[in-house]
Image 1 (tube, rainbow, N blue to C red):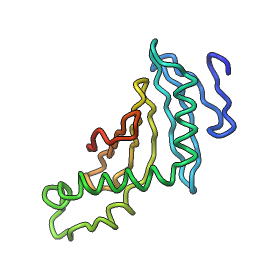
Image 2 (cartoon, rainbow, N blue to C red):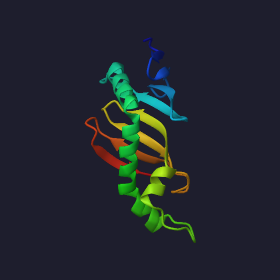
Image 3 (cartoon, one colour):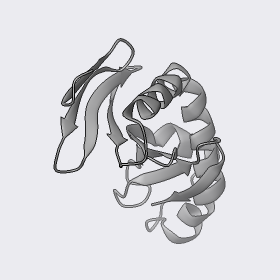
Image 4 (cartoon, helix red, strand yellow):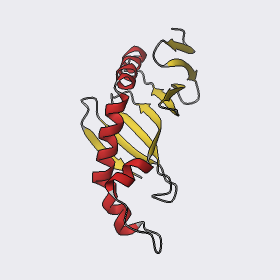
Length: 143
C-alpha cells in the first residue's frame, strides 16, 4: 500500500484524494457501479477502514437488504404522506425497495458507514442516506 494508491484484491484500486483526505474507488456489484470512499482522520487507521470495507463488500447483499428495509421503515410513510405527485398511487414497501439503488458507500473514521441510494425520483431526485455505526446499529435514514 502506498500513500496515494491502494490495490485491494477485493475492492480493486483506491486512489488518494488530497483535497478531501480520503481514498476513492469504484466497485462493481450485480451489474451496478458503486463509488467507495474511505474518509481519513489523524486518529483512525487506513488499514482499519480498508478491512471494514472489505468485510462489508463480502456481505454486501445482506447490507443492501437490511439498509433497504430500514429505508422503508423510516421513509416510506414520508413518501406516501408528503412526496406523492398528483395522481400518483401509494408506493408499496416492495416497490420502494426495488426502486432505490445503492450508488455509494462512505466509510467514516469513527467506524460509521453511510449507504447512499439513488431514489429513482421517489423524493424528486434526492439521495437517500442510511448510516450505521461501527457496531452495525442504525443511526439514521434521511433524504
